[in-house]
Image 1 (tube, helix red, strand yellow):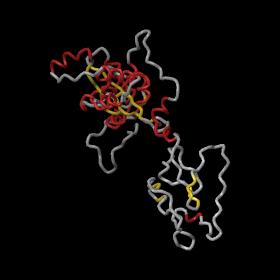
Image 2: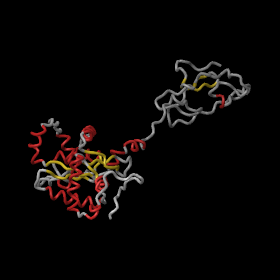
Image 3: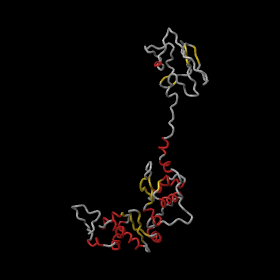
Image 4: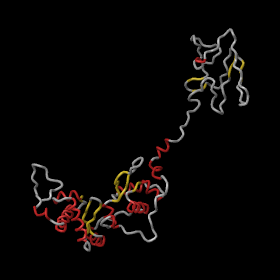
Amino acid sequence: MTEAPYPEPEGEPPHFPVPEEVAEYAPEELSPSLAAVCFALNRPVTVAEAAAILGRSRDDVTAAADHLAGSLRGGGLMLQRHQDEIQLVTRPEVAWAVQRALNPEKPGRLSRAALETLAIVAYRQPLTRAGIEAIRGVNCEAVLDSLERRGLIVEVGRQDSPGHPRLFGTTLRFLQVVGLERIEDLPPLPEGLVVPELPAGDWEAEAEAEPAAAAGEPIEQPAAHDHPPAPGEPGEPGEEEPTVEVRGAPVEPSTDPAAPPAPEPTPPPARPAPDPADADTGHSSNGHPHPDSHADLTDDDGPADPGGGPAQP
């Protein structure tokens, strides 16, 4: 006897056991039971779920589904199969009779952009949003969201590339709308009409890894006023350099690059040279302020007020 892939929990006998003779059924004998299950549930059924109900393996149920689909051809019903799901539905040829009997609400129509996107997904699935946009040449985010809300497409996986973009594919609902048994039954494209190929180049990386590309751009340098230049360092181009004071005589720095450097000023012997470490604080090494210093030349917030003149000796 073939063991059911999903046995009943131990200690709880099944309320409706599977008849022993069902274990020996051939696919053509098991297909009526499968049709009854699909009709009674009136919803998509997975192969695993049907196998658990019928007490047979998945391979047996798949073979029974193939036989059932063939036996229904030519009638008013058909068995739709999509990936691991099956469902018993009416054929499009008899839809008029069902509509007159049930008088269903008329569904809304899809826009041209939605139909184009849906066709690309149907014929090229699985496909990422960037791949669809590369073919259509426009942004498709809103259209894909609409098709996903309608249950016509769904995420079927993630692409193994930077960012792991979503891969879209059609659903069983899509087969119901277009009236097909399987996605393989899509009609061939008219002669001379082909789905455009994806543009050459690394379009996928550009579309899905924009933040990574932006990270490679040159880093913007901070403004000059954020960090004052160190002593002896020139300022930013185009900005006026501070006046260099030597013993009360203002000396403007030369702007000619070919000019020889100005000689180092020699402090008078009566006064020691100021310590370079005191340039930012205006204090000498003994803690007293320099009489010639300008303590407010620079601070943490930037350069001093340009209106201030050089310090007087």
